Amino acid sequence: MLRCYLGPVTNCSDGEVRLVGGVLPNEGNVQICLSHVWGSICDDLWDHSDALVVCRQLGYTDTDSIAFRKAHYGRGVAAIHLDDVSCVGMERTLLECTHAGVHVHNCDTSEDAGVLCIGELLLEIPTIMMVEAS
Ligand SMILES: [Ca+2]
Ligand SMILES: [Ca+2]
Image: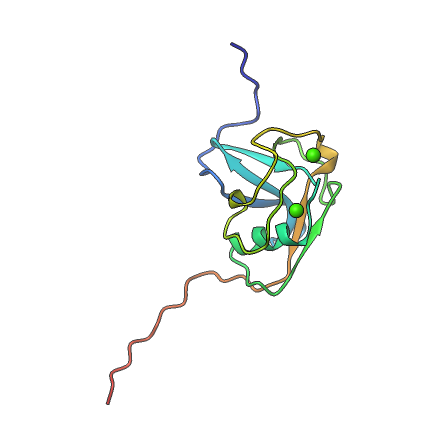
C-alpha cells in the first residue's frame, strides 16, 4: 500500500497549533499537528472567527485577531492538513471547528492561512491568593 509522505514526524500532540513565518511570535501562518506531523491550513473560508480560535488556543486574550489569506507569511512547505475551516468563534481549539476532513482539500501552499493575534499573551494561569478571613 502506498503511503504519502506528509512531513517529518515530531513529538507534537494532535490538535496543537503554532505560528510560523512571522517576524513577531504573535503572527504567522497557522500550522496544526495531526498524527505527529505539522501541517498548514488552507485559506478557503478562513476568517476572523477562525483566527480568534487559533489565538485563544495559543493563550492570547480575546481582544481581537486578524485572519490572513494567500500565504501572507510566506508559502509553506508543510502538508495541508485542513481546509474549509468553519469556526463559530467560541471553540477552545481549532480541531473543534468543522472542516472538510483531514487532508481533504483543493488547495496548494500558496493559500496558507495566517493570523495576527492582538490580545495579550497569558503565559500562566493566574493563581488565586488565599486570604484568611478576619
Ligand atoms: Ca471560517
Ligand atoms: Ca476548499
